[in-house]
Length: 151
Length: 108
Length: 286
Image (cartoon, rainbow over all chains, first blue to last red):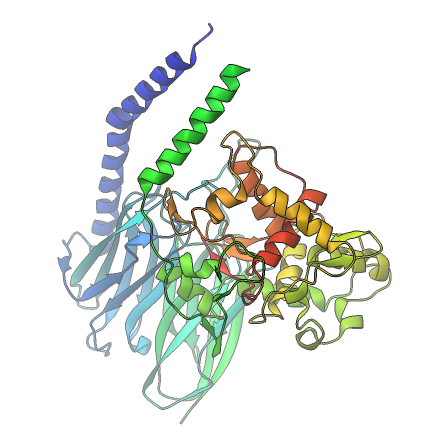
């Protein structure tokens, strides 16, 4: 069948709309559920509170391939009270898990910096677990852009 | 991929009880297992899946790593040093290899 | 015939409109690039005959996080390739059993300034020669080693290592040697020639629209003082000819072969345009 340019454009516009309405939404929902599952597994079912932990990430990522992120938890890091682990998640990546940092009282400070991959604009989440089982969370949205010439 | 090369930055000496900053970097593609090759087949995953830092044999900082960590993985973290000794840094590769670096530190 | 021209014109107009509508302009930042205590030249008066008054490094057009990554010589992932290049430099290769070091000794001394003054005139080949081709010439003529294929990992690492020895030094190209002036003219012409379905020349973006955004990329002047560059997108060092080919490909034109006459001419010309800026190799860009 010979399609005119006009027909092809109409078809692809329709296809895009379909993807956005149907498939698109269901993928987002799956990611949110997977992220929640990861968090609950990490916290042992507890809902993390806000506070104590600060997640630092750029507002706009120059490139989604390499996005610098830092976490810092307000803790004295003594034998009695210290941060055990901090889990990093990216809500809308193919898999939400990014990394889990495990600290010890010998860490001195519960802070770490790394660089991560982000598939698209989304929330980056950091969850901290203390040695007494309490859990805290911070969240930041990072905009991931598409470069100009695709070069 | 050429053999992954690690590099570490930390002070040569510190005061007892001082919290020092340690920076680490290693060359590694961190093949996520999400990409397809020219033949349309998935390129198998191969990443550094764990990073450990020990001081005088005791764990200081560990990181469990997923494919969402960027290529040439970078980790920056802290350590509180109470005595002189030896830091050992190790990166565990999916393929079973371990790359490691030792660094001494003098603590006054 | 008429149809094809109309289509091209429509696309060009559309692109032009998008760029104008996107309108977002941001001045490149006023920031100093200091690496290990040394301040690099990122803004300078342009060379005599340059169409712009001032030349600015692409570093100034990047986000704070990206700029910081380049300024930290430990964190800069490009430095991993410098280290790898150093390894290669000191490893014997080829029938003569020599390494680069066998003749050139300590690179920090012998290679200082080299990266800042290429491309040069190659009298043997009667054409310009860049670092990659110079390495291959040494390999075949002096080491009895096979020349590197374009963009071989080792070629990129070694080129990065050699150029890095000129870090901070101003880019300069001596057009008085051989017939380099002719090649400059060829490159000059190419720089302003529109190509591809998108009908864009280098100047369309880098001279007429630097400072504006093309989609989300902050357009720089397209200077070449940082190549090979660590690109966040590839999470790898990227060579200059790779970048030329990528840019031309993105205008949806057929792109020339690496080290072809056209690209060598373009290298001569764009290096001249970057005169005065510090060598930043390995730069960090998006």
